[in-house]
Image (cartoon, rainbow, N blue to C red; front, side, top):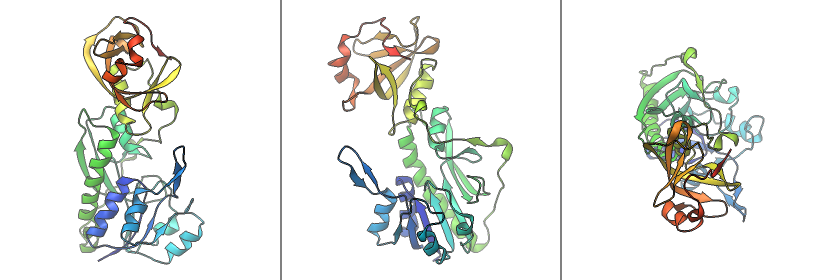
Length: 314
């Protein structure tokens, strides 16, 4: 079976790596981002890809920056048949990509050329797309600009979040990769250049984008909430503090209240958004508290608000 160097970091990459292992590919090395310290106790956290690699006793490399590193020099000597990346998180040196005897390929979570960049799944949800997918593409120096070897589409359901789509697309990407790699061997693989006129970028989500703006309609706010679930979460400023909203629902009803006003907190917690639209909050997290369903919030902190009160700050 063909040899592979695999590069990836989150669970999306772990699923793809496990697929290669299960299919019998000879994984010579795994490259992932350095361990991180997380939480108040600064517990060391290993990436999902590293955990999978260690489970199968595979060599793991974790350079802070691959380019110019000692690890790169070691990896260059391997000269695998394929270099496979899936949500690795770093640019790869051209000389490294050229060390693959057959091809350097990437599993990308969008239907390229739409959503090049680090947050394709989040942008597909935020923009209210009805469809996304995965692309198996050639790795080149320019970000996500290589030729397309294969693609497969996936519908985005109304209740999908970035988290659920990551799970679905990791499986779709794994299966499509395993369908595509043998075509290199038997000479049936095709390549399609990307249409540069249709390129859309999806840069990493900024801190500023995490805040729900009162210029958004209820549907737009809900798309942002879904896009930033499970991480980092969308928020509004309530009582001068960050108030995260993890789950919500746009309502068909309209209100005359200005955006940011409490419509009702009787059994439901509904706020007005742009254009008179209404957003019902279903799961929230006040600052310093754990996530809670809206019933628990209304029985505690949320009980003191009154209908018609402007509660959301810009």
